[in-house]
Length: 472
Image 1 (cartoon, helix red, strand yellow):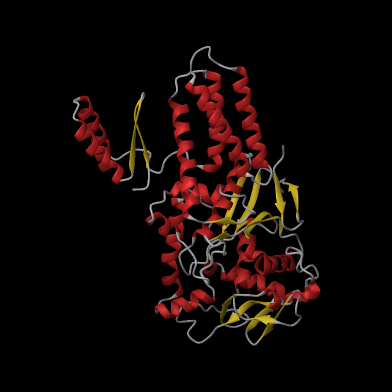
Image 2 (cartoon, one colour; image 1 turned 180 degrees about the vertical axis):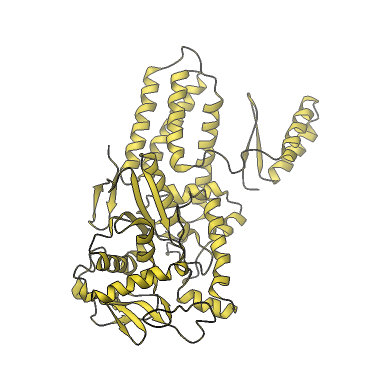
């Protein structure tokens, strides 16, 4: 089967074929580094991660560009009150973002361009738009003339008649009813230079608008037409709509062939998670509550289809942790099992191979990872029963390993965060075993309880002591 994505631009599911296979040009919306990323933001990043992993799983070579927005109105406001330049203010939040996505096993993008390092590219793009009549200057500001782009609104499937002609927006936060002409360049305000937020240009000293940076940086690294542009559904209008108008107004060519949008993460009440509402949770918050990073990753990437809203609550995170533990335990069991010669059940092998094909088909069908996981857990249940009976031979073990490898190409949760216990904990486990052999059960129980307090659960099995991480 071919890979198919729900393309926002056409409003239908389409077969994906790259412009120049096997290369894929992928651009995704990165962080605006004015504060810590919340887990709703990180859900979007893990959607990009799933998208990229499946493209690579399907044989593509992905050139992935993710921008860093290090200049906008909020950054200026916060830097001013912190008495720092925008560079000083943003770098700490940028580092925190990279720490967060590394913790969640996000595969790094190929390039992370900063807006402030591409002002020259932005100025050249604006000059071209002015020359072609798509943009105009007013007192040191430059605006995009929406009426010059007849197909404006097609991404969000808007009725052009509903847009207010002549309205302009001076800030980087927009409402749909005021989105007509929009800022490409903003003249410098008093104090901007001291904040490191003013650049010379043919239009006067100023700074870029928010939308123009993505057009300039994506075309700088990926060319005039992208294969895929992905982002949150809240960015569809006006941000992505404006990107199309700017880019296609400059080149006369399609900007991106596929547009993919992920839905929001909501809080426990069902309200969209947003810094402006104050109902956010950061990754650091969840880790401090004792949730394992892989449980958080699993919840955000597989708790719901990427185009469906997902609700964050402790019960859902605990359930995700149990699913991760179940998969890790099963993977460990399969890897450790010595297959029984001659015990292969041909029907069981075919069942696993069919499940592997069905898993792949689910991911090919618009990244339907929740459906794929349903298939995977059915196999886990049946395979555990077969393993209990000693009825799995070499072919069965090989089929199970292949299925697990395919699933972990997307999930990346089968290897625990701390795969090797530190020396101190290993010594305690060995001491407990020594105490048990000497029938000193009081000491053995004390060591077990101490390890449990540290988040290490010991399980005595016929094959020896097994351990897993739990909430301390």
